[in-house]
Image 1 (cartoon, rainbow, N blue to C red):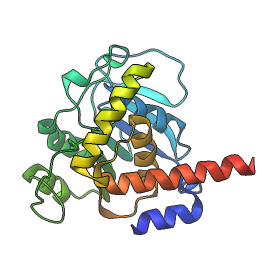
Image 2 (image 1 turned 60 degrees about the vertical axis):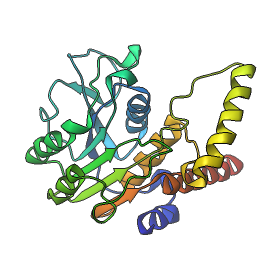
Image 3 (image 1 turned 135 degrees about the horizontal axis):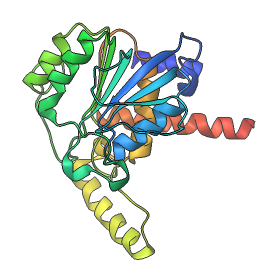
Image 4 (image 1 turned 180 degrees about the horizontal axis):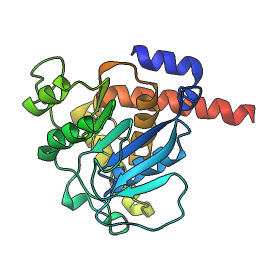
Length: 241
């Protein structure tokens, strides 16, 4: 992938640190992946402000974080939209909205009208799904309509749900999980190897910051390759320090 090759030349973590700082809006922070996305955005030096769509005003002292009750309340350069469900809500993140697939297009139009330049859609898929693309790897009419909107950049990220919901487990649970992983790996192959929500968030934000103009789609296998590249970079940084 051209953008990733360019980013690796500068380092995935610092691909856009020399560019002018931008603002980011996160829609769908209510859930494990959304929570990890918020953490990554707050730690990303490319952004000097991070807006999060919330159900109510939140008072706090988190640097850079501004909670908004409407997605188009404040103008943001880059908009991240994490598709989830009510079942994905965590008690500690229930103040934030989840975003359903049906709501994505309307939300995209609203933030576009408010001046957003880049839209990043994160839509987890089942490891066992084999969706057929309608056109240019876009999988449904809503994605086709989203791609037709005049965003400068559209990044569609499709992480596998396999592995994203994992919590700390005891030895027996880990043993059972290992057996399940072996069976799942045999059925779905390397294309859908498990990735934690933390890793998905790290790769997504790094790729979004480095993305060029136009449409880019990251399938599970590309996300895994990018995660390996990011892990290698972390090891090199650790050795150098």
